[in-house]
Length: 483
Image (cartoon, rainbow, N blue to C red; front, side, top):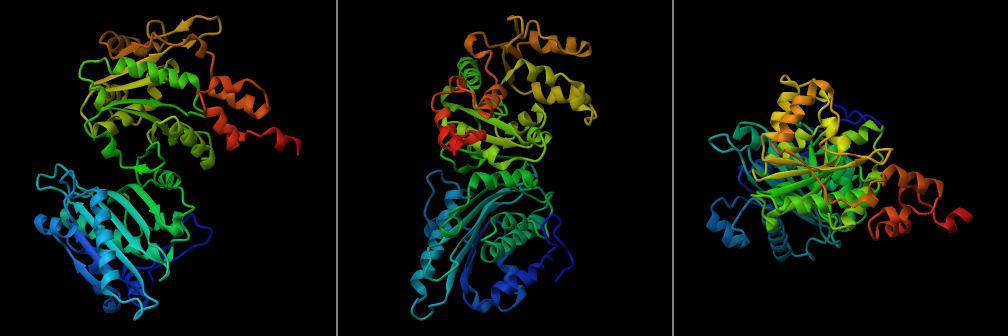
């Protein structure tokens, strides 16, 4: 064993070497399966061959590099692409079917089968695209059980194809080992994917668990772990509750984003969304049919509040999903980082909808001291893209409104703000619902905590019912209170 330890677990644990991991799998007389690797050599299975004792574990290894051969084996994808989740799933299903057909269960009653597969694109010769891929395993933990799946999407960070291949081989070995020996501790399984790897080598931005051993796993909560553990900067889930690949949702789209704590989502949040959306789709260069709305919650703000309350966080996300929204969970404190992130996937026009206080914060220099170019560098990254801010007004104590025309930024930032305002980068939402201006999430939360009536009217239709049904945000039903 290598003398390396995990920090942060309740006890120190030695990390097995890659050879020890592969050997433990190889020496388990019941584990038996196939490896199908496309795009980066046969780097994972190599670890198992080199460890020794592989003849009892590896039924077959293959690498269908030729596209015609690959299509003949796995079929043709509707989108004609090869590095996709659908392709990975087809590879896994096909290989498992072959094992089941070719190995007689009566002859091998104790065997548990698996198929490991990856389909990846490593860095191109011009070194313009670093590459990405899908990696997965379909496997049993008992001979008479249904199969379980762990599928993940990776992005390579290294600038050398050979290094990327080696990184993939390490990740694959960690995944197979974790699948068999850590499946009952999915959070640990997730962390251990980076054994003998560094986060500078590899990003995991999507993971999904399914099957009988993972029936209690919430994939959105697993997504949260990816961001918390620093494995990726942002994850996304769709209204149906499944994790989705951000690249697939955002690719070449017009993007309208709303950042908030959404604790809980209120009528003012939805009014801001609806009104900014109506303005956004009327813009030049914006195609309504190619527009994606994103509700974003940043963990950096959650961290500022102290330890992240995962359940509280999941409550917010579920309410947004119930309203049919796509949710992005990010590690970006500053808006310009969010825009840079979107710009990886789309060069099309984007919009940010926000309240007055958020915009004033953007013009606060203290957020940009770590940048060599300070606030000018940040604003270059934020506004040089085809971006527009849709500003929702704020009602003052005397009943007057603050909007883009009369808001106050720091005196040193005044001329900079004027520049963006006069160039049409900041526009007011004028068709707002005045009855919503006095609605604040914190008011709703306090009313729920104090058992007051009337907070339901401040929330979008159906949201208060969900809060009551699931006892979210500390809500207690009358039956509970009387007990």
